[in-house]
Length: 228
Image 1 (tube, rainbow, N blue to C red):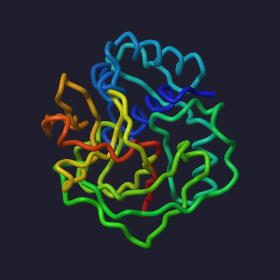
Image 2: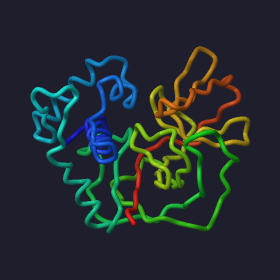
Image 3: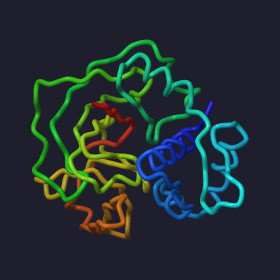
């Protein structure tokens, strides 16, 4: 069984290899996981290598090879057809309920993973989500528009699963409502009395707001992707 951070790192490495053919640097992995130092990345890499999920390729800088994915992700893919799932910030796999069925959750339209957009509109649409991807509270889904979170493996057109709530820790990927009008998906950081909303794309800039301008609507717990 992998911890949430180990699984998140494995998903990030696998996505980068699949999309660009090059494994991410330790700095990129540190930033993607919201870790304070590269030593944390080294520990996660060692754990994944010891468990046989990845292999370091000799004589090549930053070269990693993904050997296998967790059974939970493979089961999700088999049961949900062409849907690939991943966990973000969830409890370790052993603490989550076993995969048994899917649950329909509300699909509340599109959200920008780039610059903020108008606040989400409620709809009557629903999406089926594997049960073991659900957070501990109520969840809803959003379609991603934009590329500012691609270094976390969140791509334009993906559907993200959000656990509703107003509480978030530094490093959580959250749906943030700015000025009660604009919603965006970003990594949250506290900077004194301000809140920084960080992208996961070096071509985008971090946005900093007074804390009273930002309301957390929920945190990311899962991702769905369809291949056409």
